[in-house]
Image (cartoon, rainbow, N blue to C red):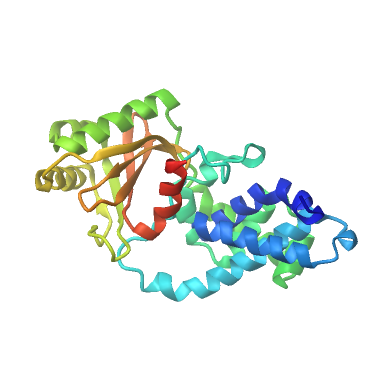
Length: 293
């Protein structure tokens, strides 16, 4: 193992976690981490006083470049956009040193999407990875005061996305199993009992697979949506995974088209308040690979 590899590997998981929170894509985060490694190999490492800071700033620059290039694609994205799902069994972004489930939850990642790239970078690097404001000012070419103000604004906007009191792991698994069974059979009574009256359903097909083009608001509309889907099926989808995804209860099924589908649930007060259905095949490759190992 080379010196570059030995000094890089302890930081790899954190780099992926940073880039994942910045981009919403685990595949992109892994690509960014690999590019940072290549740059680390090519730099004069003995001259780097703080390797972790150097690596984190390099990853942040690459993530910012990605966000700028992805902006146009996001604006033309077909239907709701959701982050790439990651099962909690993955090494990153749930690496123990900085695993904060609420900061990889679907709701929180969507809230990060509503921040400007600079606000997102400042919040993630400072609040989650303890990067000093002085370094952020240099990275973003902004004044120290501006960086502090942007951090305050980001925190205020993100506070609303902080999860309500989450259920225990056992309760979450129980509700996820009940929801899976109800959606497979189209049991409207069970669905009404499980879904909050103000539940919201997000479905991301990316224009590649059938999905609702708009958010579905309200428990009653969501009940009818899942009931109708069940009636259209010729067979019950096989279950590939039950467990936690992005820090929340979820499951993965193999659908009639031969492709997986991931469902992540946000639960509060014994009711499902948000359902995230990821069907875009591009966003399921990393998850499928993780489940096959």
